[in-house]
Structures are given as structure tokens and as C-alpha cells.
Image (cartoon, rainbow, N blue to C red):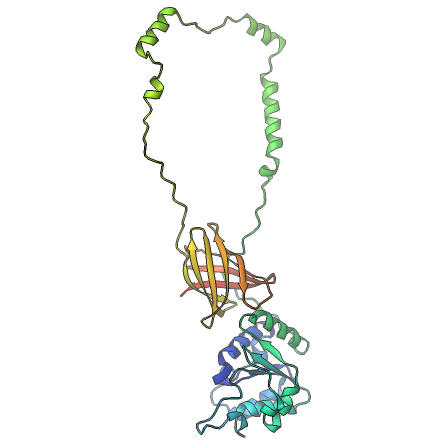
Length: 351
């Protein structure tokens, strides 16, 4: 039997949302048929125990997601579920550890701490000896990329046709047209031709010298008439309409309102939201994930693109950014986000 699946083991009350998000991230890399996620993968009517066991035997990798309450969840009688024989999370981990040709990777989610063998039941104590991976909220993308690189050594990534979506590419660099680059040469040639065309020949110059001047001098009578009509010589100045009121400043171009709460989606997965505070063409924003502020930044709107000039995520060393364009007057935005210059198709949706 070919082992080519990634099995995600998790406790629903502990890391269900993170497990679902990780599943979607891994499906983009390895394909939907390579990632097992019990709630969505199991079909109605199947025997849960047999289906889980069969999938574990087909899995080359088992990811054990461990959150802050993974070992503390209790049953109705107040007993720790992890130490109950019928706890399915414990069963999944025990079966995976018993398979020599299956890679087991414990994954610490959010603020979970590494477990010691003394905290685990006897049949899964060896889990504490395995190399751990991490998935943190501020560094989610880079943590997933690091985990995926490790998985690619075991399961080759599967290429899939990218989803077709109408998106506006990031703001392109401004390039000069041919006229902008060569207008000085064109202007110089035009002026040279104009000078050559107007320069008089000897014959034309002689004709010009023979012409009588046409300037007409004013007589004394003309001068006296002008003085009588405007004795102070201020006719033009007197006709000007002056006002003492200050000239009002022209209002800055505000454009449309793009402030407020926007949900951020990357490759069809919701990645939190940003709160934008607009100031004309400039704006500042805060980035939230699970209603927890994890980043902030500034940006500009140049009439076509809405893009960040600074985007910092707390406790993350990566460089982040985004660039979006809108085809419907700012109701929705399509474009890309960037992490260390790695792009991802993304969009912003109003709350």
C-alpha cells in the first residue's frame, strides 16, 4: 500500500480552527487528496475507527497538533481525556508511533509549551522525544512554509491549476515612453529645421533692407489726448478688482472612503482583518488575527492601487506588504500580499 498522505491529528476543543487553516494551506501545496482532516474527509456512513486506522496506514506523515489545552481537556467526570483508553487523540498518536515507516511530527500551536514524557500516558511517552515544529499566529505563513519544506522531503508537492480569479497585479514600476526618452532630440531637430527655414538668403536679405519701416511715431497732439483721458497713467491698475479676503486653500483630493474593517483572504483562506484609518490618499492600519492585534503599518492610495509602505508583524522577522486594486469603486480589492518577496493571491472584503 502506497503511503502518500498527511494525517492531521488534533483535539477539537483545542486547535480545530488552526487545524482547518493548516489543512487548507497544505492542500494548496500537496493537493486535497493528500491531506486527511477527519471532519471534512470522512464520508457519512463510514466506520470512524476503521476509517481512521486505514488512513493512518496510508499516511507517510502524522502531524500531532498540540495547543495550550491539549493535555488538560477533561471528560464529564472531571478526568483527563488523554489518560482515558478510549480517547481518540491518544489512539491516533499511539498507532502512528507504532508505525516504523511513518514520520510523526508534534506541532506546538500558538503558545503551547513542549511536553515532557512525565505528562504523557505510557503508550505515547516517546512523543516527547520527537523533534517539534511550531505554528504561531504572528509567523503563521513562514512557520507553514518551514513545515512544508520538511514535508516535501517525504511527499512531493502536487502541482495544481491555479484558481482563475480576476485580479489586478501589483503596482508596476513607472517606465518612460519612447517620446519621454527622446523628446529633447526631436525638439532639437525641429528647432534646427525651423532656423534653417527662416534664415534669409542674400536675395531675401537685400529685399528686407529695401523695405520702409512701418513703425508710426506718436505726435504731440496724440500724447496730449492720452494724458487728458488718463492723467495718472493708472487705467489698467484701476480696472483691476481687488479683494481683501484671503484665497481659500484648495481642498486635498480625498477620493472615496476606504477606511474601516476589511477581511484579508489569501488563496481563499481568511487570514484575519485589517482596520484602516484613512487620511486623504494616505492611511494607517492595524492587523488582527482571532481578534488579537498582531501587526500594524502605513500605506498610500495613488488613485489606482492601495498599497502598504510599511507593514510590521510583531515577533516576526519577515518583510510583509500588500498591493491591491479595485474594479468596482472600492467595494472589493484584488491583488497580492508579500512575505519576504514571496507573493500570494489575496483580496480585501468589507466587514
